[in-house]
Length: 453
Image (cartoon, rainbow, N blue to C red; front, side):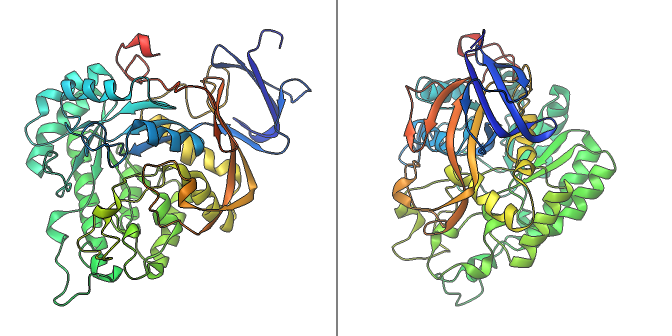
């Protein structure tokens, strides 16, 4: 192809100018040109060609809890959903990623088994300030902490005193702190006699005020320390004003939300449907619409999955007890269609998804060559049909466990093909070739593991 390894063309390519007819020219896994469409290469017609999705909030749970998920199944699900890069959260694996030794163990577990690129967040837990600089030097672009108990004993939550110790170091490193933002003072017990099979019983234990107060605390700490802080899985629209004011002030405070907060509402949850349980919880329909408004305005920068699977027995689907069930929603494969279904219904275009699903997550993780289709960017692409729809069938999901609140739902947006570094890895339900994903512990994220890049 005149010096090119690959040329993709479509009437709707996501370029810096928006969706337009174009041909994307690739050599050695990198985009070398974006040209007028022409006649050469693979013609995808009217399908949308977008940068490969970047998902910076995934719980892979390997090593240590591979019966919950694992790099093989998680990255297959990612590829099938058009996701070409994931970042694994530091908890639910054993050991958690709070030391360099644990990071190396996790990277070894992923190496040679990942169908997409895999990066890693480090963890902030009480007493590990001395581990932050070595983890950053190894290639961790940021750190995750919990303000409330995480649910696993090996990843302790932090107090404000712990944050005052960690945040100056994070600022010095030029890194970012990702925070599970619920204030412990507002986490409560269910009312006496609450029925565990009712979603409302669980919802009362994690009120919106817990998030709102935590975000206010983080805004203050951001101002006091100058450290960059990112609020993960925001579910309470009540915190949007605080985030907006902080950003107007020039503070480095950002936020993400998740597909389930944009797609579902609390009033829809069936009795006993514990696959709906997550923390923070899915809230009401009015709250959902305000999250969409925050996303449209840019107060919320991105939508990531918070893919957090667990075996059905831990979800207590047999008893349907929300109060006893493990929290977490599996949606890594469904992020694009779940978001597009809601976005389309609210008048958005396919091009609006590029900053939310690709560019902003790449920027959070410091991936300068991902999240865009332009000369010099990595040749990671998703090709998808916004006009097509499908019914979610658990047996067609590649997550280790198919339990999901999306089961039986009809979603808009069908992934036709996924490319990683210019190589097709998935097309129309089939995987192509062996695992080709790279371990992102090199100069792109601040370290030097050149053999994997």
